[in-house]
Image (cartoon, rainbow, N blue to C red; front, side, top):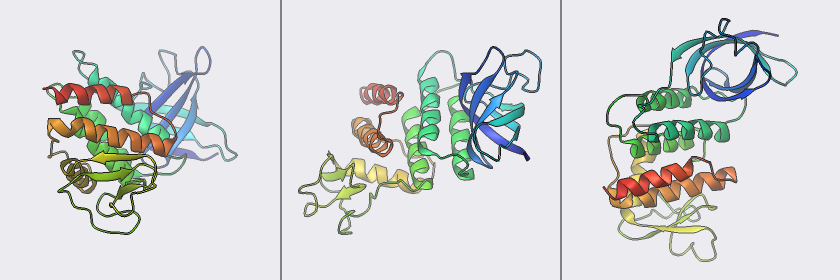
Length: 256
């Protein structure tokens, strides 16, 4: 079994025994992996209190050649995820980042740029001070979808290739994979109507590669959140648990 080293984000921790845990990691070098951490609950050992949800760590593990869980042998803390205590929203947003990575990525399919994007997003959520969470999470979602090849077509009709205007209401097809022109829309299922400003904002975020300089106007935040939530739910075949908290955030920000 080869000994591997990697930078990793801890996405999930499940108790395996009184002293051990099964750890799901998203690593920069290898992608998502599952590993058994023997002795994880011991106060002194090779993990040095580094095994905590959403923590960024430097790990050493034995990769199993015949499938099954890898064996985590060492973990060293690089950055602990500790959002401010006064508001649970950054915590829920961090959990959502983990849910996205768990659902959208495959085992041993590395995406170094996505790793850095997730690590930076979690670090920003940990900062003390005012954080505009909606654009931060939207930028991460769009960047993740782009890097993983799931970004909806927002520039032209997915059926005929006609460029889409942002001067009017636009049909967004969840199962079609993007926007539809008026000619191609009839007969399509799972259609959402979005206004031109929402489409223009989504187009900007699709091109920004994680930049959050543009903050969506409050009046379209809920509409954008609905489109993205439904797109990701359709892609995964289920709704992520933390999406309801993001809907609440969009509603709250839309009233401010």
